[in-house]
Image 1 (cartoon, rainbow, N blue to C red):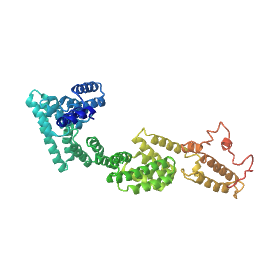
Image 2 (image 1 turned 180 degrees about the vertical axis):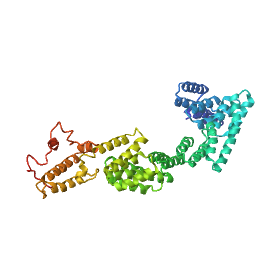
Image 3 (image 1 turned 135 degrees about the horizontal axis):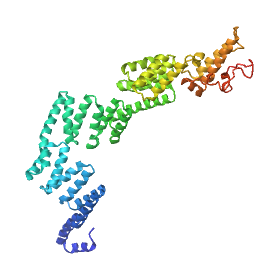
Image 4 (image 1 turned 45 degrees about the vertical axis):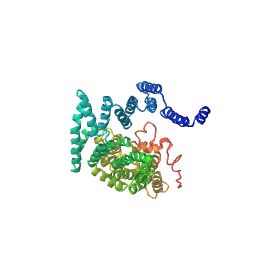
Amino acid sequence: MISPVVDEMLGLHPILSTLTIFLLSLDLHFHGIHGASKEDVERHLQMGKKLLAAGQLADALHHYHQAIEGDPKNYMSYFQRATVYLAIGKSKSALPDLDHVLELKPDFSTARQQRASILLKQGRLKEAAKDYADLVKHDPSNQEAQRQLDLIGPLQDDIEDAKEMVENNNHVGAIELLSKAIEHSPWDVDLRELRAECYINIGDYFKAIHDIKPTTKLISDNTGAYLKISQLYYQMGEAEDSLNEIRECLKLDQDHPKCFKHYKKVKKLVKQMQSTSTFIQEGQYDECISKVDAMLKTEPDVEVYRRKANGYYCHCHSAGGNFEKALKICSKIIENDENNIDALCDRAEAYLANDMLDDGMNDYQQAHNIDQNNRRAEEGLQKAQKLKKQAGKRDYYKILGVRRNANKQQIMKAYRKLAVKWHPDKYDGEDKKKAEKMFIDIASAKEVLTDPEKRQKFDQGEDPLDPEAQARGGDPFFHQGFNPFGGGGFQFKFHFN
């Protein structure tokens, strides 16, 4: 704003007025827009240098911004700011600054060598070669520049040969040549994407992801890269990783049609698999099977998820007591993958639940041979061995005529039915002692199988009512107060609920 005194001067001298306004505007432009005197620029440069040496890069960058704004013709300001950009990994931002340096001072060899290095890493080989040639021309003793210049020609040939190999489906050969090129040009997006396609064609999705991932940083708002990575994780069966990557795409563009469509599908599938795992942990095997059905409707085509679904089916049918389906599904899995420890253990459990102890033991033994550190296989084998030893003793499941995976309701139903038949007071036969023994066995079975702790011991091959174990504690049939006949004789009254 011009002061009142100046206004008065301009009013007295109209010609001077126009000239003064022009000069004042120039002065304001220099001090306001460029914003600093020579001393201010030097101060910002010194502060920037000091902060750069101290590793305070963001603060150093601020001072270099101020220095360049104050004096856009100072090549050192651009060079030092480029140095900071490189230190924080922003080579794209450094490159224009180095261009400015060389426009202002073409013989600044350090800046030219720095620019050549960036161009080489970006895969801009012709431009890099031009800079290296200029360096060698002005300084034939520059061995580093000569070495890189000698490298670029063969590198260009390798890239052309790799592209030809890709066209001829020689993906392995192309990968070898592209790997050499990427070693020298790690910031070349085209080379990484081309090698990623080669890895995809040979089925190595993990390495393809490793190549595509850096391009999300090399290209701003690279939604296509996030979509591709998500799709590859999905094909690998890593649905949760796929979900994380597709979310990154939607962060950049929430309305991206392909990303949003893929996101909805992956999110639904992940939720279904998580629910299936929860049902397994909670022992809700019917719900588990129902959720696996839904999972296959969401993704019926990708083989890795079909295998996951069959693994869930195998486990839930086995643990849920459907021996026929468990045996069929688990056996099919093992037929295609004989080293599938989970399927072997699930089938072993189904065998044991149906008193096929030798078959169960064989499956657990096979699983243990595959991985001797597998806890489930080791514990299952021990369990099968105990059950084998226990086979000659009382089997409470057989006494009640129920399967090993029967629930409490099924056990009580079987118990009531047999108790009516063998209760000594109700027994129609002549052999009352036989009825008494059968009733005691039935009641013992009911006691063990309806008590979670006792049933767990029995399932692990230990009889909690074993006469040998109870020899020191009295009559096993009155274990922990158990007496099917009440206080004495046959006064026990059997009631149905």
